[in-house]
Image (cartoon, rainbow, N blue to C red):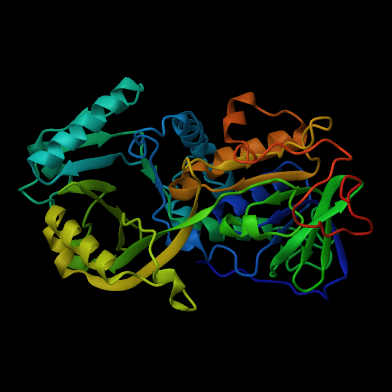
Length: 443
């Protein structure tokens, strides 16, 4: 990522901000930046921003390709977010035409979906029927035309489909650009948080939520620092369920789903290997090849829930079988992959939910009290974190402004939780961390 110059100030025991965002992945960064653009002061709490799932993400903005069977409820949100992406990126890059690829890696070139054999052709054709039935645009491309667009495609591919609505961004560059934008203010500005690095960043881990008078009032960090905030956004992925002080009865059923991803350098004589994202099906297994502006490509698509993460390694372990599968299948579609230089093999855990949809919104309190004030949850984005960043940011700012969109109630973060007891009833669950007193409804 681009380097960000940090101005250091002595940390204070208490910091005050309009918004505290717990988690510096792409979702937390997007929410923090949108909150800043809304005129609010923001503190971002994360020991290493953009080093988790964001670091390994391929950055495909693919509402059409990512339509999966029995996940149709997500489609409206994905399309909404895809439509927000051009203005979201343009506002960040400052480019009037949105083509500042060197800043964020944002590209609007269509995605090309290809199949390796007859069975893959049938599978992609069946998926296209579902996509068309949902009003999406997927166009069959003659094989000769597909190879004219991408000359290094294998002559043996069985089919090709053009997906004009699926685009891409470079998540590492995008995250770095947001960090630069958040640092673009000065001491004395209303957005500057005294005691935070560059007036916004706290490179520490959140231990739990602070409560006061029945509302969430901020967060306490592992270091003991307390951040007092009008709104606290829990956007720290898998760590969300482990926070102390969550509302009693709230269940955030997040599970780690690992993905292996490869980065390879394309030698000069083969550039460009591909000009646009190629999503393939090889013997029924998906694989994608995503070009970057620096002459590298990203290959991915593995998805595993295995025991490798329990090995005690300090970083998420990469699956040898996953690496083999990715290289093997990518070469079936683009044989020249065998001539590339392998730069990096990375694995990260993405936060999944039982229905593979995000936990997004406010948390319902007791029957008599409505939503818990001061708290928003934004986690569980699984495969779709980069794509859904603009929508998640817009939804969160709408909640802060008191203008919630009822379309997104189906993603409420408490939809897997048992009903909370009425005020005064006995409760179980974690004790909240509080600035002074615990909430009035905690025993």
